[in-house]
Amino acid sequence: MTRAWSPESWRELPAAQQPDWGDPGALDLALKELRNQPPLVFAGEARALKAALGAASRGEAFVLQAGECAESFDNLSADSIRDQLKIILQMAVVLTYASGLPIVKVGRIAGQFAKPRSSANELVGGLELPAFRGHMVNDIDFDPVSRRANPKRLLRAYHQSASTLNLLRAFTKGGFADLNKVHMWNQEFVAASPQGRRYEDIANAIDRALRFMAACGINLTSDVSLHQVDFYTCHEALILGFEEALTRQDSLTGDWYDCSAHLLWAGERTRQAGGAHIEFLSGLKNPVACKLGPKATPAEVLELCERLDPDGEAGRLTFIARMGAKAVREALPPLVRAIRDSGRPVLWVCDPMHGNTFTTAAGVKTRRFEDIVAEIKGFFAVHELEGTFPGGVHLELTADEVTECLGGGDDILDNQLVASYRSLCDPRLNGNQSLELAFELGELLQAWAAPVRSE
Ligand code: TRP
Ligand code: MN
Image (cartoon, rainbow, N blue to C red; front, side):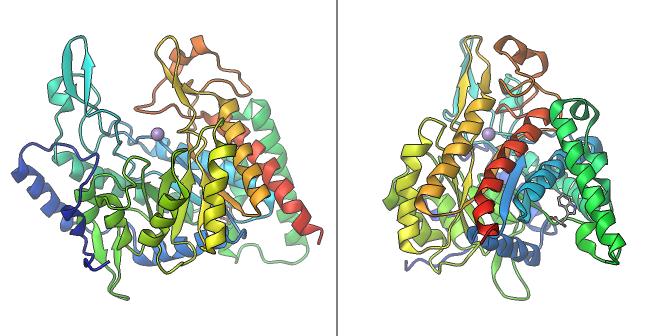
């Protein structure tokens, strides 16, 4: 590659999924203001995440990447951020306890404001308007004003990300995430369910283990690892002007970091090796990821490695497979084999959400809990066969009692989906379904870890 990388070098290449911002003056103004804002995350934190992902690529940790499909400007409250963190902490406890592995916690939060769309416009009752592209771009209501892309939204996305991160940092470092608080993370409606009771058993066991260690004379107050968690943020690097404006040169190393989040990924629709998104990600020092659908070929995947991780640096590159429950056992093995045989230290994460979306007869977009579990099981089975490590999961969820995905312990039915469907975009697992999934995952991980332990 002779072309030199710079934060704006993507501009010379075809960029898929960029909105038509209309007035270029207004866009330039917004980007200029963004360039003057402080970074949201710091290079040292991105390096710490890269090291944690590197450990996961070697089978020494497991990644829990989870959060909203699309964050909303209308839903910025301390309660909603706290609840989102709560459910992720609960799941992390279940996974840590089951697997005996450190769980790398990465939220789809504090920046997940832009959505790729299959068509640029939407036609409703004879009226054609631009598609909703996430609150960073436009609004969801179907009228010409709401759907117009508005560059001022880029700034609002920045400020909401800053407020969200501020609260997340307080919660994760200021006592809320303390292991002594395991009981507190169980929300009322979850606590009353079978999953909630199963969680309470683990929480009680952790209490006992902590008391046991204290009785043995271990000083549990002095060790911060019991009282804090490292919580990282990620989102799809979709709107490249925004990401470019938050890309800064690290004063310590001279390297470039996109300081809008710790980890950035390219979607299935924007991962062309010769496209603008991959060009942009290629020059960053952050850990980066790329989604892979069932049509991805071994040659494409190896080319992405070459573009995104030419040096084979552990933790730098994650592939997020979103194959669908039916396709995963056929589509994934050739890709896993190609990477394994190339000797590259890539981390494999399973997104069991996006390949399992369908629309019901009543026109509601949904996913079946059973399909989500089936894809994860297929993902684990493929890695077991190929001798590689199933390094993590990527989920869309909320702690709330929504009815967006079918099935699970509560057995949400077709006709119940309308009861509480609040997602701006894709259907999310609710609190109960999320916890139930954590138990399923815990069992898979336990089976994985068992032979290693008995050696
Ligand atoms: N710091 C450790 C970790 O993140 C232990 C820990 C503290 C923890 N609070 C937690 C683990 C909450 C899971 C959930 O793994
Ligand atoms: Mn989604």
